[in-house]
Image (tube, rainbow over all chains, first blue to last red):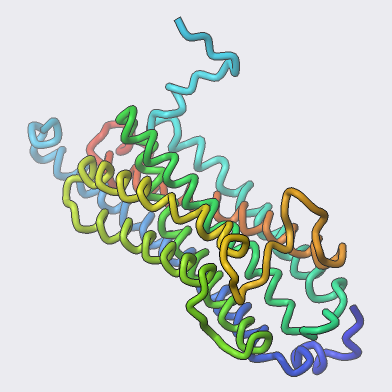
Length: 64
Length: 247
């Protein structure tokens, strides 16, 4: 497919809003998921460290 | 005694302790493959595939719409299978896998609905219509939301697993309804472009772009689910010795 220039490519034959609206929102949705995934891991690791500190202070607590 | 012909000790890998590092090693491969397949698929879709005769350039939405719709249904089935295994055998990791798949499945369903609406407007003249295909796909989104809400509402994770498993299994009936809706009812949504019975009804380059992007979406979903299941393992087993050593 030869678009004959980038302006034609971005115009998508008059359907720019529909095509880029689809691809843009898909990209945003996936980027948000990656962000939330990374944040969840950071928080989970922090929770593990907190649990470790708590168990070091009170060893009986952890076995419950 | 049962003989496992695969020669793999499945019990070993069903333990969160052994699965956690395995998943960690697999994620970069699936994420890398996702990126490569998506870039190749987008190149084919935008620079090799020709303009569609009737729809013009608007049809290019197909390259993400169909892969997302496939994944939305496929993830639900896989999620229901993991949930059922967790329910039947009380294996912790199975239920964690189901929980890890739900958000990604919901996102794929949202993408399928959103891109479908933006494709429907120029081709059908409407963003939305209450036909069987669109309505059953919307129900799929609500099933994912229901799963996630139920999980969040129940404090005890093992009880939440069982409740969510029942919901996932009841909801799985919706998947064949989505898939066959275009055959069973007269829908505005077109019939299957790609089916097992016949050759794809589209140009080879169009089909290639869609297929490669579907592979990319598939790899992405595996990477995302594996990443999430690792966080779930950390959250649930944070008091285990091996977790404190691994973290």
